[in-house]
Each structure stands twice: as structure tokens, then as C-alpha cells.
Image (cartoon, each protein chain N blue to C red):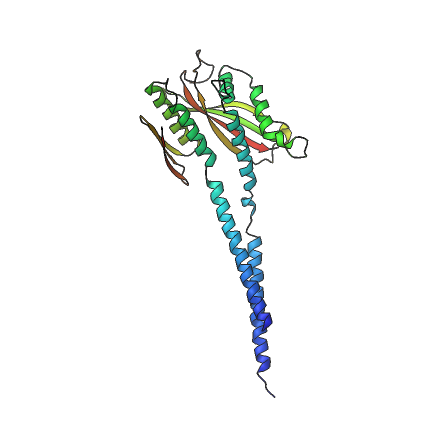
Length: 179
Length: 105
């Protein structure tokens, strides 16, 4: 006895099996799309935090003529130790984590300025804030920048290579990472 | 027959999940690539310089050069600024994002 009912069941079974296997393949490729290189969303948060901190420091308080950031840069030009800058920046970027078991954020700041006569662009160290220097090796740093406008030119020639005595815009670059 | 119908529906659901992940990643990447903070900071700085009426034109030209050249060297962005009597134009291009803006006063 040869019957064709069994044949139909077989075709249905095979078709369903292929569909299910292909579905499994689709689902697997979906979940493996996130490769380690895509974890930079966390870096983006750090970048935003740094940018916001610098923007807050660049606000001119009512009654003042210059922002705290400008004052710190002027202080740096005249050879100040910049502990206040470190304290303020540290306070802004690390205040959310106080008392929690989260790695604190460390930073390294630089100033980039241009000499008007030679046209050279010069990068100098500004200030660093390492909390635990021995732990800063496995870090993934991000860079944030802020334009700082110096309205009052330094009167005396500062002890810096080729720093002009004129109102100018300098770039403050901060490298941030979690220790 | 029921098995086949269920298989097909699961297949389409899987297809939707697959596509949504892909779309989500593309969107997230374009958000990450957008130099939002850089552009806002640049605009803020340019306005601050423009609004200083006490500066003679040559001082403003030097500051314009500061911003344009430092942007090119350290931010990998071509910035071109024009100050006229009552407006500022900002041109910004970092290879991914192109921005042209006019601020009227």
C-alpha cells in the first residue's frame, strides 16, 4: 500500500525544521552583533560628564567679569599651583560617586595656544588629578576640550614658550579616565 | 500544518528583532559621531569674542585665527568664521559632520 498522506507530513516537517534552524541562526546573529568595540557608549557618558563639568566652570557669575576657568588659566600663566582648579573639577566629575564603590575619575589637563608671530601651535601641561597613580594602567581615556577666552592679556612676559601678550582664545584639553 | 504556521510566525518575529538591533546600532553610532559639545562650545566662544565691542578689528582677526588654526591642528576640524556688521557665520566640517550657521544680531 502506497499512500501520499505521509509524504505531505514529511514535507511540512522538513519545511518547519528549515525555518526553525534559520530562525535560530537569525537570533544568534542578532545577539552577537555587540562586539567589544561597541562598548564606547560608556566612553560617551564620560565625555559628556567632562564637557558638562568644563561648561559649568566656564560660566561667568553675576557680578564677575571672567569665568572661573579663565581665572585658572590666568593663574596658570603667572605660575600658580592650580589646586583650586583640580578641586573644582574633581568635585564636579566625582561628586556623583561619593561614598559608592565606583572607580573615581582621574584627569590630565593641557593648554593649547597659538603664537601669533610664528604661527606655531603649542601644547603645555596644565594640571593633573591622579587619585591613585598606581592603578591607572588599564584605563580607556577620553578627551574633552573647551575654548577658554582670555580677555585680560598678561602684562609681564610669562615664563612660557612663545605665549603672546594679547587677548586670545586657548583650548583647554582634558583627558579623562576611570582609575 | 500548525507547525509550519508557527514556524513562519517565529521566523518573522526573529527577523524583526534582528532588524531592530541593526537599526538601534546605526542610530547610536550616528549619535556618538555627532560632535554636539564641540559645536556648542565653538558657537559659545565665537559669540563671546564677537560681543566684545572693546576689541579693535585686528584683535578679533587674531582670535579668529587662533580658533581656526587650533581647531585644524588639535580637533581635526575645518572651521571658518566670518564676522560682519550684524552677523556671524560659522562653517564647521570634521569630515563626518558639516555645519553652516549664521547668527544674526
